[in-house]
Length: 560
Ligand SMILES: [Zn+2]
Image (tube, rainbow, N blue to C red; front, top):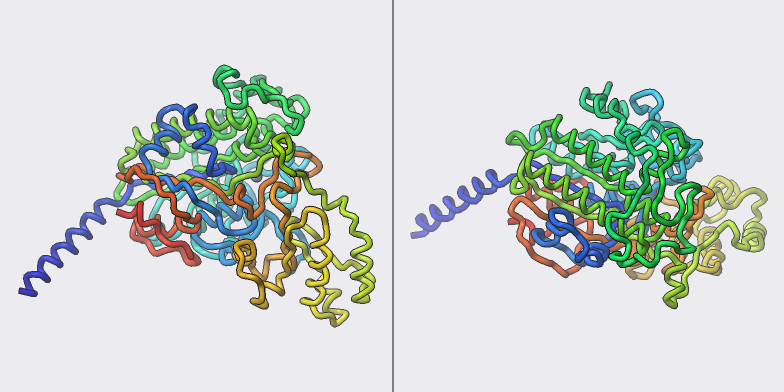
């Protein structure tokens, strides 16, 4: 009797295993939209076309309450969390920029001088770069070497005997590199050359198809053109609100439609392309060339392609998420996405492609917009804080003559540990004294010292937990600063912008998570889930082990 049951069980097990074997996707297409807050797709649902976001929302498993659960909601932090299923405390990418205690210099997350970018004239143009994090990089070398754990894409490669096609593509290096992991290949856009580039970490020379794509100079085709509205202005939710005083008016680009890109030799020509839907259109075109030329999804192995769309972030920073520009950008991204999905359908088949879409972070509303609606909201200018008195008081108390603070690169403040040690002072006591002063400044919701985090004697609140998840002892600063909701720094290397994300608050942590294609069920899940859950879910689907530092839980609704 029990033998029969065992036989049935065995047949069942073998049956399941074979079904599982057969049901591995040919391609995993991981799409990340920079600064796509969790509510935006629902807001524009009625305005979306077919085959893009609407397809994902209608045919996929949609998590409507997904959040990052780390404090510093910046691009590298979010992307690496999505890629690894680990918190920043574990994966090590605690900020876009941190102070390297050994060299005493600010460090750009994916910089690695050992691996220069390939090609003359590529990389970062310091004369025209407006991204303040890029400006901290001292070389054009790039690699994933500072990511301390494996990514899902790494685990996919390891699970297939070291053979797999793994690629990450984005306008931003810090969005392409973490997704490709340590074993894949990454390409990103150089505003200096207008080309998609890579570094010697990945290749000795460009694959022929990349050289050919760049030789066509696709970015140059936009010279002399403008970003125009996709539809009649009166049909937009923000159709009556194009010209808002808090939007950024870049010289020549302005804050109303049309936004002209200017001539090819304009110093900011390629930068302007990235602050428009064109950045994503170029990314799409490059991704299509990659899918074709690398024959993704054509054999028994599971291939992986990450496409990270950056324009939503740049447009959000300059105009705010509730602007005509952001609305049009999302409608145009919807068309770009539809084209990508339709292309993948013809090349691989959406039934054989597992699609997952999320965002590296959300974003706040522009304070000027919130004030119109009755909120108290404002920008924070730490440079103008009246801090001389507080610093004098601290120096006097501790008998310090030189600098007490080495640097403050939000969200971390770094104390002068050398002088603290020289004077034989107690690091924790000094940190706590600085925290007391910081907490007095206008707009500071919470300043929390690393020694308090280490002591374990911190209140168990969601805010403190998010800072703890962001805390890596060798990279985090001595004090973490959180501003009150709807208050943030808006200076972008001298440029004043409408919106800056990076807080632990809901508007910055809230993102969409959607799984679709590959027979994924159409359903809406409203329970809270986290971005660390994505990587272990993907691992389970392809039969790989979870990434090294993963602390997320597989999302049962998408595992068949
Ligand atoms: Zn951003």
